[in-house]
Amino acid sequence: MEYCKSEAGYFLRLMRGEDIPATIAKFVADQNLGGAFFTGLGAIESVKLGYYDLEQKKYLEREYPGDVELANITGNVSYVDGEAFTHVHATIMTGNFETHSGHLFSGMVAVTVEVNLVATGTKMTREADERTGLKLIKFQG
Image (tube, helix red, strand yellow):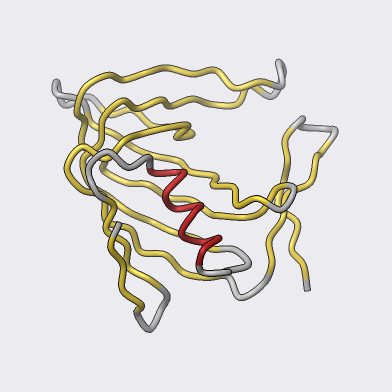
């Protein structure tokens, strides 16, 4: 990954073979940021998308093998048990021009992924929520 600091935060260029959620989480932790929000685009492969079924209280997943266009990623980074944690949603386009979107569990950079990342300026953590079965954001200070 390469990056530069900007007035609004950071601009990241993820490289071929890097896992998007893991690379962004590591960057935020390495920069000692309390949390961040980000958007991006590019070309990725080995994608796993899903959605959360509230009734079942579990994620349902689907894999998309091969290269796909990453039309958009939107997400944030917070901390769970002291570790940086990414919550990412993505819209992809497959070779037959169909789009798919949802929670991005994993995706490897196929060509490049360009990310605009803005630090929150406050510590963001996640805590278990009994009603949903998810760990939801809690703002600190």
